[in-house]
Length: 100
Ligand SMILES: [Zn+2]
Ligand SMILES: [Zn+2]
Image (tube, rainbow, N blue to C red; front, side, top):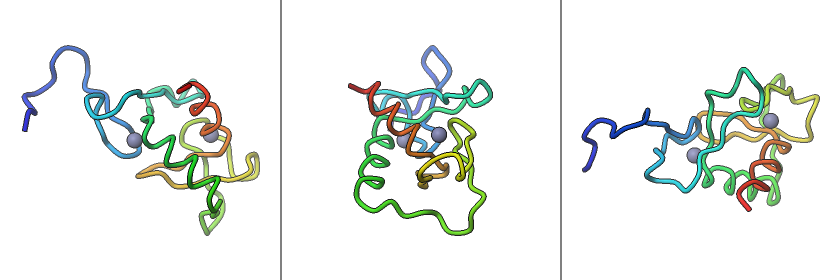
Protein backbone atom coordinates (compact mmCIF):
# COMPACT_ATOMS: atom_id res chain seq x y z
CA UNK A 1 0.00 0.00 0.00
CA UNK A 2 2.09 2.90 1.23
CA UNK A 3 5.58 1.58 0.80
CA UNK A 4 7.17 4.55 -0.84
CA UNK A 5 10.67 3.88 0.43
CA UNK A 6 11.66 5.24 3.81
CA UNK A 7 10.51 8.57 5.06
CA UNK A 8 13.26 10.03 7.16
CA UNK A 9 15.06 7.72 9.56
CA UNK A 10 16.20 4.23 8.68
CA UNK A 11 13.26 1.87 8.35
CA UNK A 12 13.52 -0.14 11.53
CA UNK A 13 11.74 -3.43 11.65
CA UNK A 14 11.20 -5.94 14.37
CA UNK A 15 13.95 -8.50 14.00
CA UNK A 16 11.54 -11.27 14.95
CA UNK A 17 8.33 -10.63 13.04
CA UNK A 18 9.44 -8.04 10.53
CA UNK A 19 6.79 -5.48 11.36
CA UNK A 20 7.88 -1.91 10.83
CA UNK A 21 7.69 0.97 13.28
CA UNK A 22 4.49 2.05 11.58
CA UNK A 23 2.82 -1.23 12.53
CA UNK A 24 3.84 -1.46 16.16
CA UNK A 25 3.88 0.80 19.19
CA UNK A 26 7.42 0.24 20.30
CA UNK A 27 10.62 -1.33 19.12
CA UNK A 28 13.04 -2.34 21.86
CA UNK A 29 16.72 -2.81 21.19
CA UNK A 30 18.79 -5.84 22.08
CA UNK A 31 20.17 -5.85 25.63
CA UNK A 32 23.74 -6.85 24.92
CA UNK A 33 26.14 -4.38 23.25
CA UNK A 34 26.60 -6.67 20.29
CA UNK A 35 22.88 -7.24 19.88
CA UNK A 36 21.90 -3.56 19.87
CA UNK A 37 21.08 -3.71 16.19
CA UNK A 38 18.40 -6.27 16.93
CA UNK A 39 15.02 -4.94 17.90
CA UNK A 40 11.83 -6.56 19.08
CA UNK A 41 8.37 -5.06 18.92
CA UNK A 42 5.81 -4.73 21.69
CA UNK A 43 3.58 -7.27 19.98
CA UNK A 44 6.26 -9.93 20.00
CA UNK A 45 7.05 -9.19 23.64
CA UNK A 46 3.43 -9.72 24.60
CA UNK A 47 3.22 -12.88 22.54
CA UNK A 48 6.32 -14.22 24.25
CA UNK A 49 4.96 -13.30 27.64
CA UNK A 50 1.82 -15.27 26.89
CA UNK A 51 3.79 -18.19 25.54
CA UNK A 52 5.99 -18.35 28.62
CA UNK A 53 3.08 -17.97 31.05
CA UNK A 54 0.95 -20.42 29.15
CA UNK A 55 3.20 -23.29 28.22
CA UNK A 56 6.91 -22.74 28.54
CA UNK A 57 7.80 -25.14 25.81
CA UNK A 58 11.49 -25.54 25.45
CA UNK A 59 12.73 -25.53 21.93
CA UNK A 60 13.94 -29.05 21.27
CA UNK A 61 17.54 -29.66 20.41
CA UNK A 62 19.38 -27.64 23.03
CA UNK A 63 22.22 -25.19 22.63
CA UNK A 64 19.91 -22.30 21.88
CA UNK A 65 20.96 -18.72 22.49
CA UNK A 66 18.80 -15.71 23.20
CA UNK A 67 19.17 -13.37 20.25
CA UNK A 68 18.68 -10.30 22.42
CA UNK A 69 21.09 -10.86 25.31
CA UNK A 70 23.22 -13.75 23.98
CA UNK A 71 22.61 -15.86 27.06
CA UNK A 72 22.44 -19.56 26.47
CA UNK A 73 19.73 -21.96 27.44
CA UNK A 74 21.76 -23.02 30.49
CA UNK A 75 21.83 -19.45 31.82
CA UNK A 76 18.10 -18.76 31.71
CA UNK A 77 14.90 -20.53 32.66
CA UNK A 78 13.49 -20.87 29.18
CA UNK A 79 14.09 -19.75 25.64
CA UNK A 80 11.14 -19.48 23.31
CA UNK A 81 10.96 -18.89 19.61
CA UNK A 82 9.55 -15.62 18.36
CA UNK A 83 9.27 -15.20 14.63
CA UNK A 84 12.73 -15.68 13.18
CA UNK A 85 14.47 -15.21 16.54
CA UNK A 86 14.81 -16.80 19.93
CA UNK A 87 14.36 -14.95 23.17
CA UNK A 88 14.79 -15.82 26.83
CA UNK A 89 12.37 -15.26 29.67
CA UNK A 90 14.66 -12.64 31.22
CA UNK A 91 14.56 -10.46 28.14
CA UNK A 92 10.79 -10.84 27.90
CA UNK A 93 10.52 -9.73 31.54
CA UNK A 94 12.71 -6.69 31.01
CA UNK A 95 11.02 -5.68 27.78
CA UNK A 96 7.59 -6.23 29.21
CA UNK A 97 8.43 -4.02 32.18
CA UNK A 98 9.65 -1.24 29.94
CA UNK A 99 6.41 -1.33 27.99
CA UNK A 100 4.60 -0.32 31.16
ZN1 LIG B 1 7.74 -8.24 16.38
ZN1 LIG C 1 17.66 -12.85 26.57
